[in-house]
Image (cartoon, rainbow, N blue to C red; front, side):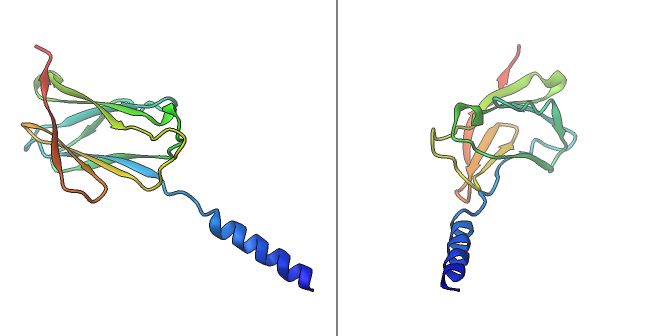
Length: 134
């Protein structure tokens, strides 16, 4: 009976310590103005989001697991304006090598002057101004 109790205790400790890692999230918000759509395209080593569109005052995101390798690096292109001529390329998520992160939030807010960035619960800061294809 003591061996059974010990075995059950070891199993309970193993599964308690080995809890699941929450997914990380990239969120994109459109605050460009009424009638202006934001287009984004994100990719990492394994995944390609394709072109996605966000209407005014809406938000959308990507949830993923960080592997702690270069494949967890997410690059995103954001576009808006007439014929999508205004753009920004950002490294939306940069992994810490050999140390997977859990439950991280990266929020990018598109406004007419620039793209703003917020990590987890920290305040929003201007990241980059828009570039033009012309």
